[in-house]
Length: 276
Image (cartoon, rainbow, N blue to C red; front, side, top):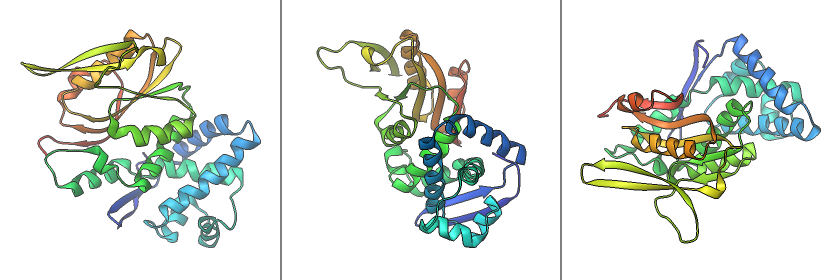
């Protein structure tokens, strides 16, 4: 995220988006990454051009053309034609649009606002991430940030993140593995036990035939508080001898989890104090 001046903070249909101007060196670095990934074929170049149109359409209900102009440097009249789908930007223009937008959207602010709207002492991410708009926007931003990674599998730690994991899997062309809470006959699993209380534990299951030492894994988690569940999942992946390429947590509560997961590079999209 750049440290520039905030451009906009606007709420539309329950969604609040904050946009900030990224530094130019960050933009150039992101452009270099995107070019390495997408410039090698006509299909990929076309994909980037269409994706730029889509992300502008997603942002337009929340951001004015004036703000999009300040963000992208593209004249408002041209942006209008992009949003309406009358024309498609050139590959070079599309890469710059995607680089700037991926660095500018304040995902933490967006998610924190959605959590606070639930007004509940229990956080259910399946309710927070119920809006297809939010899931698609998250998918685009995360897929761009992950585009330089050589991912082969996405491990979803809970059903609440499966919609986002599915969209990311489609965008990155990577299979998805769900950590299960129930074992089924005839399937071999890596297992892990999560202590819930002195007298209560929960067993998690990861299909052995779906993960191997050849895999580079993105771990996608919903909420982390104590870190016990995520630590158990990471230990199961290590049993499979797969490489943990990245760990993304949608929401972290408090700081207790950070000590238990200190050996891992956990990236948190939004953070709330606990109790909140």
